[in-house]
Length: 68
Image 1 (tube, rainbow, N blue to C red):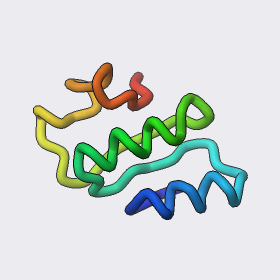
Image 2 (image 1 turned 90 degrees about the horizontal axis):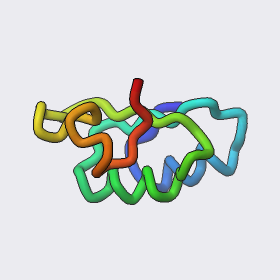
Image 3 (image 1 turned 90 degrees about the vertical axis):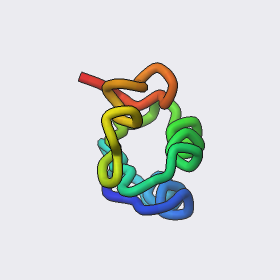
Image 4 (image 1 turned 135 degrees about the vertical axis):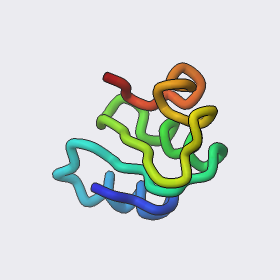
């Protein structure tokens, strides 16, 4: 499910039926908060406005995003 802010992340998790939470256009601090809130309950994916230095593949250990 695609989300644009922390409120939508919480709503998606409460609603259920989610396999992956997509975090769209989150700033780095909100991204970290969202990933901490989600924990390991769901796969996470970040997109939109991410530069190489902020990429989930480059900073996976710092952001906590699921990686492949």
